[in-house]
Image (cartoon, rainbow, N blue to C red; front, side, top):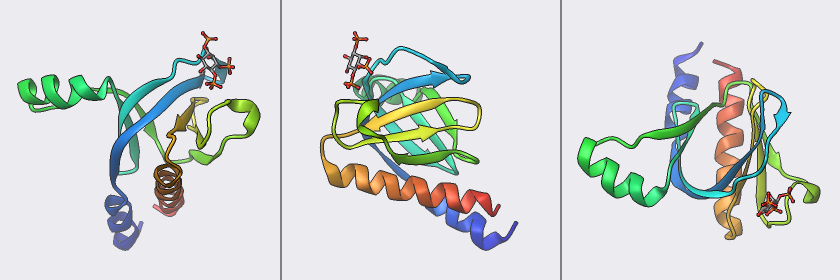
Amino acid sequence: TSRWLRYNVQNLEKAGILNKTKVCENGKKVRKNWAQTWTVLHGGVLTFHKDPKSAMTGALHKTNQIVPEVTVDLRGASIGRASKDKSSKKNVLELKGKNGVEFLIQYDTESIITDWHKVLMDTIRQLEYL
Ligand code: I3S
């Protein structure tokens, strides 16, 4: 409820290209479909966009807007390193949303994943106090 916390969440913003796949929807396991995605953290919501190239050129130029594919409300969500059995890839994060949705997020560069892990953890924590 404090303005200070609201201010802090608003400042936890980040964007970049990551590999992601959904693994659960409504608590039900779904088939993986790894894809590169333009990922944006803004205002406590994580948004995955379709193909980063088309999103950054076509859509952005024509409509001045990137069309989101999926949004995950980080309020009540959890983030952590995925265990080895979740994926054979390295540097994998597991993001669990409140409504039984679950994503794996991955990037070969360790520091990129470490940065996302930190900012997502900080955002989730800040949202607990709003
Ligand atoms: O957890 P899984 O089933 O081993 O995930 C792999 C599969 O989704 C595979 O595709 P098929 O559904 O066509 O078998 C993907 O190509 C792999 O990337 C998935 O495993 P990793 O370990 O990369 O998350």
